[in-house]
Image (cartoon, rainbow, N blue to C red; front, side, top):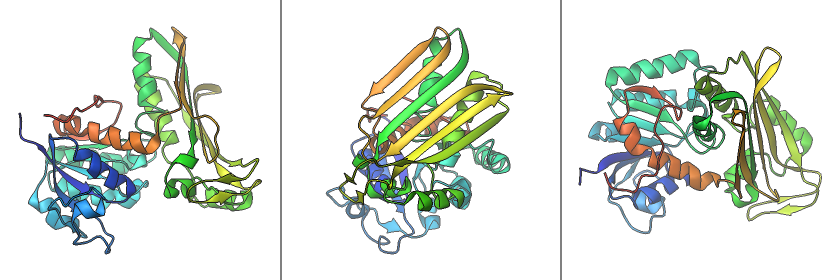
Length: 334
């Protein structure tokens, strides 16, 4: 057996904590450091903060520098959705000569929205001879990588449709708030207009599919509307009255001139009756794939990220995406 891959966990919120617990099940991974800016977590044992059921002998540090200086093979980064908010965190990790896999949604395929920052991250990673990957369930798998993988058996692809319905009642409180559950329609639209409320990553998924399939897309459009509760919905964390917002209905469309080539639809709301992930490929042959019951977002995000660790460590240096990283189950041994 090879030496374990040494991992630094950067961000120990609900998702980061779940990453820690899954990594402990993989003997091929060794957690050697942890970072979180929350002063309430600083100095505490990572096992306690991550509710792992035992102490790990790894103290959570409020500062990244000393943890990165101590060394590791890869950083598992779980702090924010916005790329500009985490660019300094990512650059610090890269400058330390450590690979990074991040759940930052805008990092999943940042080339159209953040071209200059993409070039900076790519060049810095190449200089330091490490790889940087943004991934997760969505973006990173359910609404992009899955369609690209399915297209492998096609002779030609003319258009792609992906639909994802998520029952947010079964998700954590931050996610329910993130989709606007409980707001009035007016409050929802005001927060959308302010750029506060949305699912991040749908245009990135459309761009990844377009580039991956060679579809000559010249523009990507996105709409964000509320899903309004028709009856009262009660979750473990909150209550949504009839007429209030239950969640988000988001659509991304990619066009070549007037022709729509990619259609991505996401409905994520509390009280959804049936969750599903569905991909339709128009081409030769016509293909339809449906995952009835859907792919659980939190479980899958953690799994995708942890399962990609060995591939990121072995990847060519630079900014990588789910499009060019082999994605498969990691049984835990290296």
